[in-house]
Image (cartoon, rainbow, N blue to C red; front, side, top):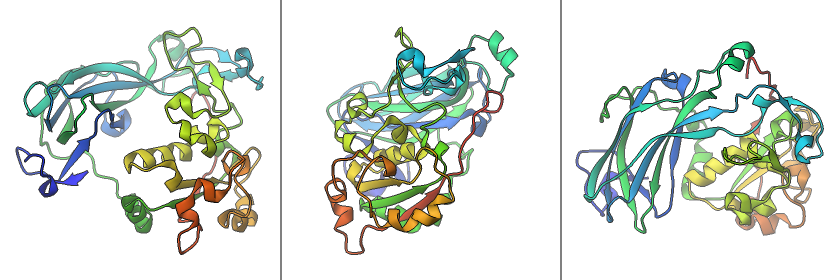
Amino acid sequence: MFRAPGVAAFRPGFPVEGIVVIHPGKRPSQFLLLAEAGLDPGDRVSLSVFGHQAAPDALRASILSMQVDGAAGEWSPGDSGQTHKRTFVRAARGELIPVPGASGTSGADSDFELKLANVDILGSAPGASPAVAAKDPQPMTIGVTVEFHNGSDQDVWIYAPCLASGSEARNRLPAARSVPTLYRHIPRTMQKLWRGEPLHILHAGHSSDAGDANPPLYFYDENPQSPTFKAPQQRDFDGARIGRPEWNDYYPRWNFYFMAWGRMRTALLRNYDLPIDRIMLNSMVVSGSFLVEAHSAFAEYATLASPPGPANGHRAGKGWRELYPDLMSRPGGPGPDLVVFGYGARFARDTG
């Protein structure tokens, strides 16, 4: 993101603070909970975004309904050849399913306004009882995602995106939501992210924070047309499945990638355009761990006394200096920049 006065490629059509450049092939997106926006399935939303392009139809904008697997019944990883044999309700597995609502391209003009109007939020409302959910064949929708994709071989610039409820695409509306400010309480961490400096995040918590127990967070088949849709495919991490083979040394199993702080790390890498060796996720949470154990083991983890391995969320075989050369060579040492605590998670079909 750039401040508007610093952009030489073009001038926006009206005063704005920031402008975002989307490089060729990149696909930034933003997820919004329906509850946060006061929306329900069946409501209508509309999108407007301004931009500048060097090639016609370079930008494609999409609005997607984000749905969870609401199938009735039970499942077991063992049915798909996995070693875990316990049985779980079907709603406790898999990823959010993006269901396309509408999409459009930026047209032929170099300076454009792209609009998507009167887009239906598909699916059924969350929170229904199991009996009601069993009668409603539609998956539950919990949010929407707005996605911008640069399909050209040159940069595209966008500014003033506006997602509004209703059938008309409008722009420059008063902000309906307050901008989160919790990040202001970790200023040094934010400064390091902005500068691209190496960051050491120490993650303490319970075993359920690692997502490796009930059931483990496998890599699932997320293709709705596949005969193995929603079936667990792998427990051991394989970065090629997500287009990141260079990440193989940084995760032993998929649960460390899919757990909450694994997702946060991925989001930080994406949002700040960083390689994975710039953010160490040093995880103390493994099977059977409790938060109280963080006190006795804190010094060992904080000083990286043990080599990389599953006990700290890494694949064994390489040393810390091979995985995080800039972190290990910084003058102040590789100690934690940020310590985060998890308090476990418990799933129940009625309560989420």
